[in-house]
Each structure stands twice: as C-alpha cells, then as structure tokens.
Image (cartoon, rainbow, N blue to C red; front, side, top):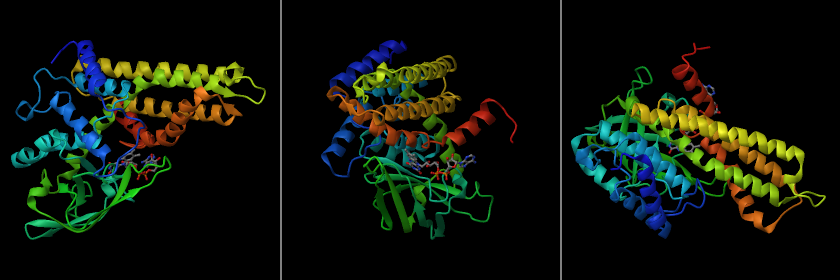
Length: 388
Ligand SMILES: Cc1cc2nc3c(=O)[nH]c(=O)nc-3n(C[C@H](O)[C@H](O)[C@H](O)COP(=O)(O)OP(=O)(O)OC[C@H]3O[C@@H](n4cnc5c(N)ncnc54)[C@H](O)[C@@H]3O)c2cc1C
C-alpha cells in the first residue's frame, strides 16, 4: 500500500475512472432485488477486492499492512470527487463494531459476507422518541429461554428496505441506569416479526424506513458484545461516522462554480443575468469566503490525521462546517432560481441538481448527530467549556 498519499489518490482515481459506479444523486436508495441493487453490490465488492475497503481491518481479516487512517480519508475524498457511489456508512459501522466486539464465530460468519457484499447492513438505533437522546430508547428485548424476544419500533433506518442484516440496540434491563440497560444485537432482517416500511421523503426518494419489531426471537448468537453493554458498542462507531463527513468539502469548489453557472443562466425580469447584479455578486463573494474557510478547516483535520496517525477528534468541526455551508450554498442557489424569470437551457441541469441538494442538504446536518448536538460536543470535548 503506497505511503505516498498522492500516489494512492492517483491509484484510486484511475480505478474509479475504469470501473466506478456513478452516483447520480445523494440520498437515493434502490429497491431490493432490482438491477441497480445488483450493480451497487458489485461495485462495493470490487472496492473490497481491490483492497480499498476493509484495508484497515486486522490482518487476519483482510486488512493490509501499512494502512493508515489517512488512506480512508483519501478514498472517501476521491470517491466524492469522482462522483462515484460511496460505501454505505451502515456497513462500515457494522464491520467496525463486529471487529471490536464480535465473538470469533460472529467474525467468521459476518465479515466475509460484508467483503463479498452479500450482506448489506442497516442501523436500527433511532426511535420515534429517541434520536439525539438515544439512551431514551424503548424497544424491549425480554429474556426468552436462552435468548430474547424483541418488541418495539425503529425509525430513520437507512437502507433497511434492502438490508440483509441490522445492528439493533434494545433495552434489556429497564431497572438500571438507562445507558447501562441496553444490549446490541446483530439481526437477520428476514426474521419473523420484522416489518420494514420505507418512508417517502420530500426529495421523492425513500432513503429511510420505519422498522417494526413484533416478538422477534433472537438467540444468544445474536448478542454483540456483553448483555447490557450495548452503549459501548453503539458509541464506538459514531465518532468515525462523523469523522469523514467533512470529506465532502472536496465538492465545494465544484458547487461554487455551479453557483456561478446558475447566476449566469438565471435571467432577471429586465433580461440581464443574475451575475450582473451587485447584490448577487456580494452574496457570491460571501459564499466564496465561506467555501475557502471550510476548505481550510477540513485541510487542518487532514493534517492532524497525517500527524497523529489516528482518526481525528475534531471530525465534528469538519462535519459542522461542511454541512452548514452546504445548506447556505443551496439557499443562495434557490434565491437565484426563485428570483429569476427564466433559466437559460444550459443552466437547467445545474438548477435541477440544486433543487435536489436543497431538499437533501438538511439531512446531512442531522445524520450522525444534529448540528446543535455537534456544537455541544465541540464545546465540551474540544473547547472544554463548562456545562451551561
Ligand atoms: C440522512 C440520515 C440518515 C440516518 N440514518 C439513520 C440510520 O441508519 N439508523 C438510525 O438509527 N438513525 C438514522 N438517522 C436518524 C438520526 O440519527 C436522528 O435523526 C438524529 O439522531 C436526530 O434525532 P431525531 O431525528 O429524533 O431529532 P431530535 O433528537 O428529536 O432533535 C430535534 C431537534 O432538537 C435538537 N436537540 C435535541 N436535543 C438537543 C439538546 N440536548 N440540545 C440542543 N438541541 C437539541 C436537535 O439538534 C434537532 O434540531 C438518520 C438521520 C438522517 C438525517
């Protein structure tokens, strides 16, 4: 594995150019047993086979010598830059948790199936009344012989409509302190008692699902980690989930040039283009300053990964900076669109992309920790501010 990161990036870029599966829209998911699903599984499998995914796993499980966290970041950035379909967070988090907490048998059964893309995973954490405050979860796993009977409802489960496996957290001991009474489970999604209902979003697509669990029987082999030790399992992956959202900042230059193209194509009532107007120019200048700021913040995070050789503790800063700037840019794009009387033909495709970004962009400010929660984490963990 090249330690020269530029050479590694170059290698990924040519791999994507040869075989990359294009991502047309973020937040778009496919139905189970469709051709698109098979294509996505094939692409994920080829990323594992080429050694780009799973390279950080322990050597016995297919990890590669010399792998550094910065390789993961380079992969993410190049996939985003190349508009290629990204590996699913849920699968990456599942493998992380199985490696850290799984029994030998669970590793043997589950990790190869992740590598072959036979198993797509979903995350069954959030509930209607437990999102940011996940410890409030109410799904119960009650003792039943040597296993458990699980009843409750999960929501916002990305990919549950085609997932083969779910990482579930449920309450196993209601009598103890709420973080202490939770257990993590690995759950085949085809078990009796599981019902998955996709939720149609304002983008028109269905990325998330509601998942209903009605007396689902789980055995001891489904427990991941210790009984009542689920909090540790679920929090172990969240930091790495946040760490790489900032990788999306590689899109910002293109987004800014898309804004300029939009302003050039957006016709005002007097026939001029939006770009000719001083107030639009001022908004664009502010947007450019913001884009450059975020790029510096994310670059700083990358430098720390290189220096410290570990996943960054300041991933939340990059996540917050990117996701909030993304929303600000989409708002400016919508202002340009709605204040124009027409869009020239060559701007229509770009305008269409902005519509989708506008509807989807907010989701990124919520997933992996809503912005308010991330600000709290930055205040407490990075700035060491006292609790208010
Ligand atoms: C794109 C996307 C993918 C997702 N994928 C999954 C998935 O695969 N599996 C899964 O289990 N979940 C998933 N989620 C759910 C996600 O984890 C939750 O939406 C998130 O944790 C917020 O919870 P909530 O929606 O219940 O909002 P709430 O927690 O009810 O928050 C509502 C608002 O109140 C604010 N708020 C809450 N508590 C505080 C506080 N203490 N201080 C200040 N403000 C606060 C929040 O910031 C937010 O603005 C996904 C969400 C998105 C958007």
